[in-house]
Amino acid sequence: MKSKYSIFSLLRNAMSHHQGWQRVWRSPEPKPSYDAIIIGGGGHGLATAYYLAKEHGITNVAVLEKGWIGGGNTGRNTTIIRSNYLWDESARMYDKSLQLYEGLSQDLNFNIMLSQRGVLNLAHNLGDLREISRRVNAIRLNGIDSEMLDTAEVAAMVPILDCSKNARYPVLGASLQRRGGVARHDGVAWGFARAADERGVDIIQNCEVTGILRDGDTVTGVETTRGVINSAKVAIVTAGHTSHVAAMAGIRLPIESHPLQAMVSEPVKPILDCVVMSGAVHAYISQSDRGEMVMGAGIDHFNSYAQRGSLGVVEHQMAAVTKLMPILSRLRLMRQWAGIVDTCPDASPIVSKTPVQGLYVNGGWGTGGFKATPGSGWVFAHTIAQDQPHPLNAPFSLERFTTGALIDEHGAAAVAH
Amino acid sequence: MLLIPCPWCGERDEEEFAYGGEAHIARPLEPDSLSDEEWADYLFMRTNPKGSHLERWNHAHGCRRWFNAKRSTVTHTIDCVYKMDEQPPKDRKGEV
Image (cartoon, rainbow over the protein chains, first blue to last red):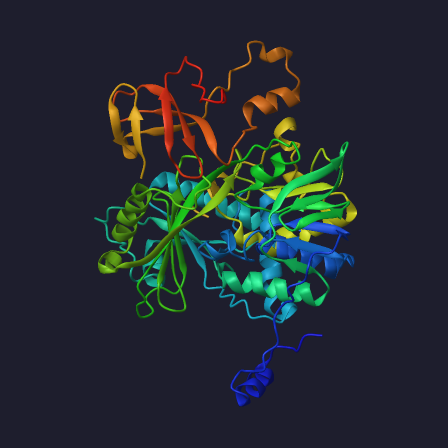
């Protein structure tokens, strides 16, 4: 039994110079077989394991991670959370996730530092303005909070934004989701890991899956760098590497992997208390609790697994950001990095069964998987446990590419996530 | 940043090029005779390999011509470029 995190446990441990904190999760040897194996120990995989244990009572579960948990895209995103998506299917999926986020710190007994500081999407021209108005109305019809701001309201909310008439990117208005915001991304992975571990899930790090074992059209287990592990249910949750792992089972996916770059500046005093996104110039900006300006760019267009992108993308993004917020022009960048995102043709994820019995896939979240972490795990756990999708993720099946029922979220997703 | 050897212009900065995705995906000659699965495979499914990738590039801000390249998606090294109507050159082991 894990000791509960609280102000009292903090005080108690302070008395012993913080030497007495429990290990947060075990580091077990892999067992020969499990009821379910989850490939990939990122936020989505750990959330899946947690909800399998919590909602479906399946606790004999292994999460196999080739590196360390949360070391991939979970630790590389810009931590933005929102649910202002255009289409009904996406709105329901992402808002389920946001609702879970809202209670997640209490549910996991782990402070994920959710800060619902509001997410602004800027309009720079009449076309943007009409598109954003349409989006706001569609989102409100789905019962999700969303509102339009005019230029004066945006200027009042974000004083450092250049809202003057002669601005390079004039601000004609913005949509605002007040429930949107940011959370501590590592905290989300660690919180799910700790809570899943407490319910009996084995989190096995430094264990790379090298093959998926099949008996005809039925999955029987996986080959790993630490030996063969058997299971009748195997779930692929390896964002960025979804195609690579699915190919081990002979499955072709409509996914291509691209680098997505992000960067942080040196820390400064608080100057931005919300998230500002601009689809037109491929930029999204927020300020971390440490004072760093956290900024993200669009994807590099070539396929890559290299976790690095080209400088041109960063230059393009910084040129836009310093025009939007001229005060940032003299800040130095401290770090810049890339994650590998797997993009689908319709910019919507695949959370689905596969043609192989007992094999499930959760990927293709493209540039915006972090915001979906709890919701994705929640519906995927249902899909694995019941061997059929939850109504929330049924539209996100692999078959939609054959039936043509695509969920085209390029407006909400492909550029600024 | 990639330095891309355009078959016509020589090595030029990546900024001059547009990416065209996976190469050698031939449009079916008789689309009407395909099943939905075959059409989906042509339209959407991609190899997306971790390693050697055959892909198309367009020298958009140069000679504006298309060509193919064999590039590693792990190291970004461009092994070779070849023209649109050519098949990828084989290595010493006879593999593409």
